Length: 98
Image: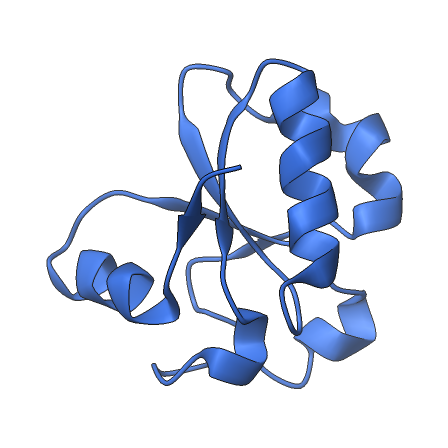
């Protein structure tokens, strides 16, 4: 499983790179603050909504601490998606949140 640090994600955003971030936390967790460009698809709904994702794009998976996003990363990898897990999740995120 590929991983990326929160700092690397922040650097990509600051450089204006087009990245795709999927936050797999529950909506009430996301409401407390998320990475601005993140799309919320709760882990429990991922298998039903993965058809919304493009297999030609790479997705950075995010959760609170990195556990659920690692599950999501492994699941999507098995389905043929290009995915990377953000180590440490939002607990390790030092960038702006909305």
